Length: 380
Ligand SMILES: Nc1nc2c(ncn2[C@@H]2O[C@H](COP(=O)(O)OP(=O)(O)OP(=O)(O)O)[C@@H](O)[C@H]2O)c(=O)[nH]1
Ligand SMILES: [Mg+2]
Ligand SMILES: [Zn+2]
Image 1 (cartoon, rainbow, N blue to C red):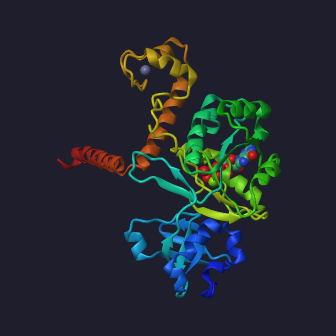
Image 2 (image 1 turned 60 degrees about the horizontal axis):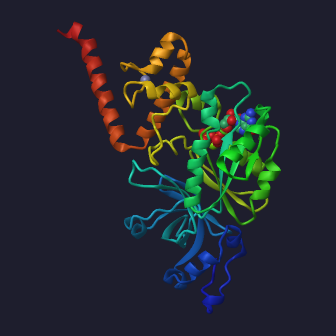
Image 3 (image 1 turned 90 degrees about the vertical axis):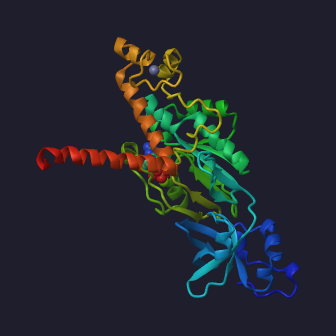
């Protein structure tokens, strides 16, 4: 805890706060704060957030905090990684009285929503995690794990942050050709640093650790199920984050990680694991052709469909359905494409209150109709 300095300009912040990533950038901002000068607040870093409740650390103390009323009313929000000024905790609950200007912010671009969500604040390095497909896996799995287009969208958001970017392709243990795949990805993305890892064999973990510098902050981003939490645990050397089973994610579209917490690794680097963001690049936010399914033979035929936005479900003049009929495209592949599309639609709806309300209304009307159908034979 700082004691009100007589010579503020030569004020020395706790070494423990510096270890949390507190740099000259924040130092200058704290020193110019009247609240700090008057001894009413101390600097701290937000380590975790869940439903408006924060966990903040001053370096030698961690406590629960909420946003002060005036901060909330100003429409401000604190994200994990933010440096803040907190009013000394009365009992156990502290109040965040000021969110310090950010050095960088990794944000999810969600143009269908008015708010761009800040995933992590003050990150130095953002690691896009993808996964090598298991030997013999079909395109459906490949599209989920290792999709250059999707990785590109993450890279764009990282550039905007701004932060240094690194691509990690995990699960190298399950693909004999992982080196060739990683090299191809590196060429396609024109990014030098692509590291293949495996949390099963430990491969690439030392190389990855070398990228995580003491006092710096890194965030893991990427699709659900690629192994971000597994990597977090491996780097931490303990089971801090729970791991999901791929099957549960595939069938129910659930994410394993829901909490966001900034961990300090044994080497002094800080690491934030985030929930998979399958919806990340799925908004039609950059003129991307949303009608593409990622299934090569289907996308090749789509331009021949009568309607430009053909969903290949029951539209007249659908070239894909014709091909399935003719046996040149496997029906199973079309089913998989539809399944993926439904999943994406689910993700989109989840983040759009208006669509959500419409969905709820539709469900209610359907339930009512079903009930009256069930009742009518007996009640009349
Ligand atoms: N074969 C193999 N499987 C792995 C590896 N790393 C993780 N897995 C498995 O992949 C599945 C998903 O791992 P998680 O770490 O939960 O994935 P995640 O990216 O954190 O997923 P979300 O939290 O949903 O975003 C689990 O079944 C892990 O056991 C790996 O290197 N090789
Ligand atoms: Mg996870
Ligand atoms: Zn069609």
